[in-house]
Image (tube, rainbow over the protein chains, first blue to last red):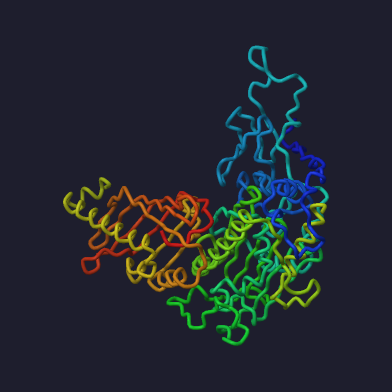
Length: 427
Length: 168
């Protein structure tokens, strides 16, 4: 075996799923009706792991800015599956499972680092930066006794690799060979929103939040496809015009309905206290900030929108809100629980003042954010209701399936997502 | 208290300062544990800085904070948001602050550290550990009263349970 040899160990397709085993779960052919079991049933969760996260999807795993040098790596996830993202000495980025091929040890136990190789701590199996098994101790035994059989082939015991693709500094991975190229996967409208943020400028990671929500992971995708709540729940969005009905707003989806972007143009001043605000309890026309710097908006993008809240199916939320730039990676941990890894970033050539401004503005989001708190709590309340009550279906009935994009009192994007979900899941 | 501080300040002065800082922690915890959030900014100087940062970020030199207030205005805005604009389930919080030590004295400026734990209790749920961490403080003596010029809260509980509503 030569040093440059590639790791060819790949994942097999998931085994066939016995759909008869979920025959008791009935879902009328209406994506606006959402039965509780979608969010609570272990069998549905298992099927999601196979058909969505191991299926024909691209999953965000890291920013290249987290791995600037050869040998840099981060721990990450594709769905619930632990992976390592590593850059080899030639500069190429690899994504492989965080599970030793020998006995299953999750060998990478640090958030990030730099290394020449990954050594499993249990029996010292050693992998290179591409995930290829480079060596095992006592391969030929000791004193002619023991050791692996003559025909033991290191190459067959490498870490299994995922397909990886980088676009302007963002790394996505897929278990599937059938998934379309990333640009086609996103579609032209969503790609344009994505490229507004990732426009080739080098990124600087400002830091990472992690939190665990006691809810189903799909509720979070829904949350960002749900302009109805955005204009009702969040005082900071409504009162200061960051997102409110009555602004120039809209929601777009890709052709398949799996991704979306919630768009808003903040007025130069505060939004008018007109009749469109009458239903909004969170709208506080008299509220004044003692230090309004948190709301300063430095124009930096060639876009009509001051905010773009993008959902990329299935595991990514990408936020551009004024000068906040951040990614939220969803990591399901069972039907009723998921982790969010929030990565806040700016650009490498930001001035010190701009970096401080982004950090200050990040008070709005995150697990301690002015409106991050609202959402985290609301989703927990949803799951509390689904978990403990007599089962029933929820509804997502606002608006029309075909309507103009500037309607925001609508559940259109939620229904589009569940239509695509039904296809993927085989319902 | 560290050896360098001990050599420059008398033992009696250090004990006195430590007792004063511990009394400050008691008052600070009392205000937050009673839920009197709008009294919280008064523990800071007008230019006081308050940061809550995950230990992981702090050790990787990544500046992102869970909460960041630069000056009294932002402290007040944070308190106002919690009291009047944010939506969250009612809860009790309780601070335990321990191992207070004085790490530096420079005229009216005192540096100190302490460990903290914050417990959180929601309706019909068992009490949980919301956060454990370490305060790295700079106090200033203003009219014989200690005020925070800088409180950096570095928390070990990197994976936040749902959210952190109140300052720690």
